[in-house]
Length: 314
Image 1 (cartoon, one colour):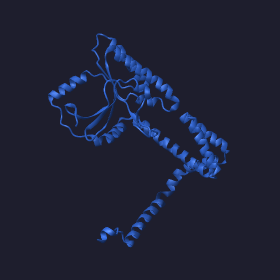
Image 2 (cartoon, rainbow, N blue to C red):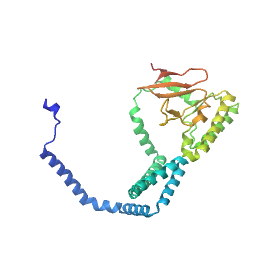
Image 3 (tube, one colour):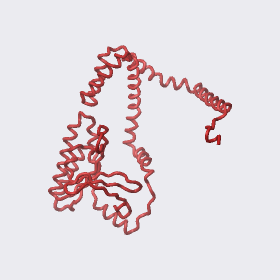
Image 4 (cartoon, one colour):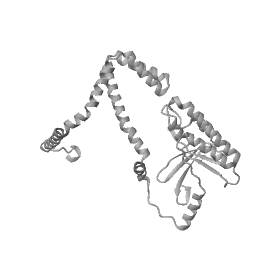
């Protein structure tokens, strides 16, 4: 019973030998490559020391003013600016100004390094197909399950459906708005094949990428409102069903009720006739919750995606 009451411990002689092997390996590595690594990072160290001395020797009102200016450019919120000013003033008042400036200098250098490495890597991932394939494969691999190949009848049905689909992939918010306008022109063409369903996947994703920060929030919402209004008029005039998918976000300030809110605010929420919230409900199952509808009460349903289509998952 001693095994259950006393935790097994490595013998002191074995532990000492283990520590010696690690110390010797680290010492050999430092002797062989230490000078090269140190010389490689010397410019970064010189810049860090210079920046730290600059921030310590600069007048504190100028430093606080610069920090407040950066806070305003990032948030456009006077509350955040006031909070930053008061916080840094209290840090200096309590005698920790030099320590704070040293920390800010280290963080600044860290941000510069992250940007210097992250931006080229991000451009590489966006430009080269192999990088995107690696990323998508690693993310999608756990959810991939082997399926049986389609038989001839199923393949013919799938191809017949795919032949009727038209897919547009806009690169930015402006192109997404232009696609909506082109759809209106195509629907007015009586010789073209009639369109009865329009699906807009990730409605606000391009708008969020093109308009970032609170400073561009108003412009983003105006363009989003124009796009939604145009799509709504298309649905009303030509009797077309429009299905929109959108992301949600969690608001940490909500203490009671549902903290999950749709991205796009009331601009998108008030335009939708029916709003359904989808979430994972287990293996191969989706829980669909009717959040808002003019003539239906709130309810939930469990769905399952199969080879035959969408089926009842309960």
